[in-house]
Image 1 (tube, rainbow, N blue to C red):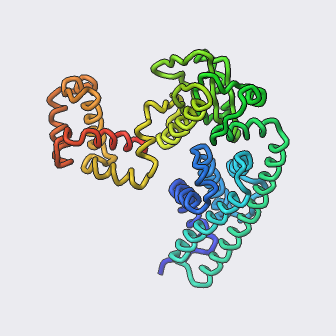
Image 2 (image 1 turned 90 degrees about the vertical axis):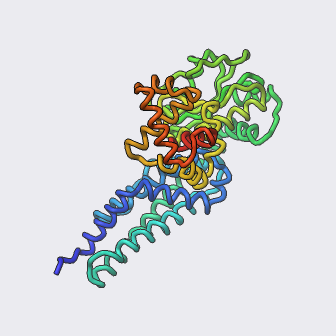
Image 3 (image 1 turned 135 degrees about the horizontal axis):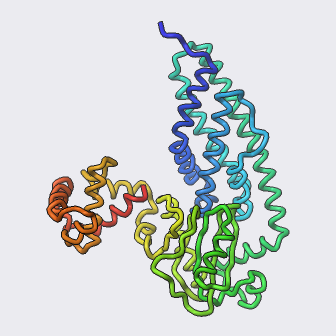
Length: 393
């Protein structure tokens, strides 16, 4: 008869299994928060959702490691959880929305843990002991961390409401939501002229303000405006009196994730370029892009059709059926198809780019058409779109 685990051993094994799948579990939590916290969903910014996911991961790691060990509740709020409290306060979102994220997370994590503990090879008394211990800890963890993030939120909200930074941020948000303030008065508050030619960006970096300064200098733009959302995420605008003449590739910034809108002038341009920068940032976050900035012009298609992950996934699976695997063969076939389309459907040019013989490209194209069940030219637009979306998985 196999030896049964002790309650603590089962807690350790179950916690370890959940920790191993924490990325997928964090994605599930983020999806549930998006569906059930309308204040967050209505804001909809990639900067907020990046922070929500980081907070979920931090709480998962802290809590599950404690359950596997001494089950002591944290004495300090996890750093990324604190960042979510701060950005929630700075964006003027209600405290109740922040606290609901913890109730949602608690419910989902407990459900997963209960299912796993029910399947553990231990006797009924030991299972009850393990379940009771896990339940008690999760309640204690959520209560303690909720109290700490409430304190962080309240302190930040009070500080922010008294500060000049808050006035600047509120005016920026008013403009983004459609206000058209007096230019002279707005310049006095923002230290930035809304009548300029603007290039908006979103920066995720250890020091996003330094990133904006460096990019402004590199693009010969003497005016800049930065709104810091968290310690490592900021909205930015760089401005010039003359029009921007952007290089084909924008300056790279090591260890930073940067997304740009397109240059535009005046108050409406201030808003439009910002919308584009945030759409581009959503794509950049999904692609994991770092270093080389992502420009809206280059990802406008992905931002337009990739907003619904579930529907985009179905589209990609349908269009790329037979060549959508993660194996080496599928990767070669997709690379060949991308090169073929990029070369204007010229097999010889595609072969030169890929470093293979033209006959190899022709053979691969026949293989692709056999897998798809149709010529690659019959749905080129759909195939190219699916190839681009596939890279964002």
